[in-house]
Length: 449
Image (spheres, rainbow, N blue to C red):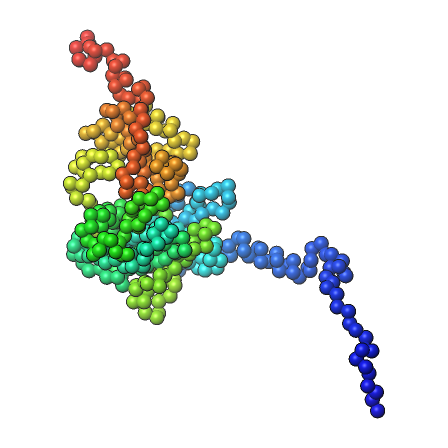
């Protein structure tokens, strides 16, 4: 017979929130197994995994070479087979903010390595070499806060319609929305999209592509090819400076431009470029289309069966157009070189931009005695009071007036025709100064021989 025990007489278990470290003592390193796992994870995260690329008679060229300077990478790639490209990547060292390294490899090899990296670590760009045939491409963006009524997707669809129409007029061939790869990396604060045209002929280089884009943008500004300039589809937005501007970035057609890759993000942004939900091109490829195929198609200079040189598109602006960067007519023939006919003036401009910058080249317009100094490494713009993040600046020197001023390639600054206040060029840097030191008889040519 089992006796019943009163529940109140049962021994009670006392539960106390006691940490194991308080009972066993604190361990300075923790569990050896946990520490081993942490070391393994850290080791895998920091350096990229090495991939063994095997060459073959029909396979891609095997090369993986990193350069600290873009010019070195471009010089190296010119000696390599045609299937090799130059890519750039942002350096993670905070002391090297804005600096980039440059990689020469085959796109497929880069794709395989990118797939082994975390999405936030994919910070790669295609270098659009200045002499490379390329597809038509667009960089579209605007800030959403000052443009609450704008519909980014509708604006892009309208832009594609306008471009396809102008393509038919200028080049005589069809272009459809399903021929355009539409990538997007928009956030709540900023609309951002890339368009890469796929089934159209290639331009000879990105400068030719940029000339066509500027023609289209010029017509949009004049309202010549827009259905409803005041509608939500209008390409005009309010810029961060408060003025009206196109949402088309016209500054991405400069020499050796860096263009962000598919599935890649800007450093510390974690906003990768992905296929837009409004894209028609990828859907037109069918179910067999893989992300690797999209990656290759997204490359501006990667083209299967590249057109013959005589089939590449060449486009120049109308002869009655003006050169926005110098104020001279297009029929004037400029002379471009690393220096100008006025070495003292060159030295003066160098002194304005050193030690960070240098003169990339000088364009001389003899008819107006005007020089345009294109600068490298120097981006300070007086319009915004700081350096542009990606677009360069220039100094324009008017030798006859004895003054110089600053202009830049930034689309917002160009939209308002910004030029800084003219400043005097030191007298000793002008040719008139040296002419005044020459005896009159030498100038007349009647000096004794």
